[in-house]
Length: 328
Ligand code: UT7
Image (spheres, rainbow, N blue to C red):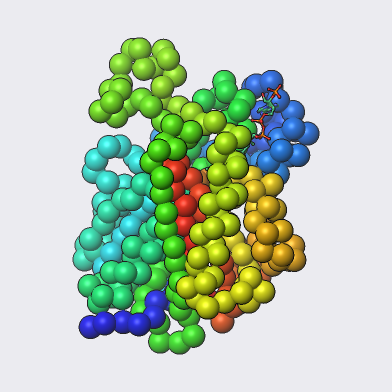
């Protein structure tokens, strides 16, 4: 069976209850609420409790998406979890979520595209559906970034938060369509944003712990500049592939990394503020989860309605980037 169109049938979200404010961060590192707000747009972020893992967040977001789709877990055929904070090296967080859901008939996997993970999952899941291999997919971007955040490094610790955003995608019977997507990566920029410790290059040891190698390292300024350029370029490509102009976009949702990056993209596309959904002030940068969380919130608030043209754009470690145009 070959299927022409793929729609987002439902969305789901879960964010931990614990809120960490900029004022609390002022007591932890040499920073200020004023610096964080003016340089990033972030006011608070959510932090998972000890013992709560990425799969717990992903599972809860997945349950919401399933309920909203009116589906039971045993109907699921494909589960893709995008994360850079898996519960463990293996089994995949996707398999752990499959077990928690009791989705016995699904095949489950993880993908690692850092903050671009949600768009990568959407693209990969859609291709499986278009070829008729599977009839539905649960895609989840989920992160517990707090466990790889160096709480002594003011350059990074003010940025990140925990959470999960999910979506069920299915072949479309109505107006919902994935109109276009574009993915990209450039591994030569890998050392601008990475986590050096714990893998086969630097296996966990007393030294890797002492040298703080199990935390995110980021050279923020160059990442910022490349993020703006690559997100603009990828979004232009998706617009062209969809045969649309920036003006045709009803709502733009980008990865929530920095309000100034989002603003740069908005001004490049000459979109009015009301067409760009932003929630970075509440959750900070949740990597692969951020677009899924924002999409769910925008749908729940009826900012996005069925038939609207939605633009998605992301950028992250790898370096990776991606964009998608969806008729919702
Ligand atoms: O999600 C994946 C992709 N990630 C991103 O897209 C992140 C992209 N990068 C950024 O968002 C920004 O580069 C940051 C928010 C990380 C930093 O903003 P910036 O405007 O690029 O600042 P900067 O790194 O150039 O630093 C400016 C100053 C420095 O002080 P000096 O050297 O000028 O004296 C930093 O030490 O700000 C200082 N600084 C801080 N000051 C107070 C850096 N972090 C802090 C802080 N509080 N938390």
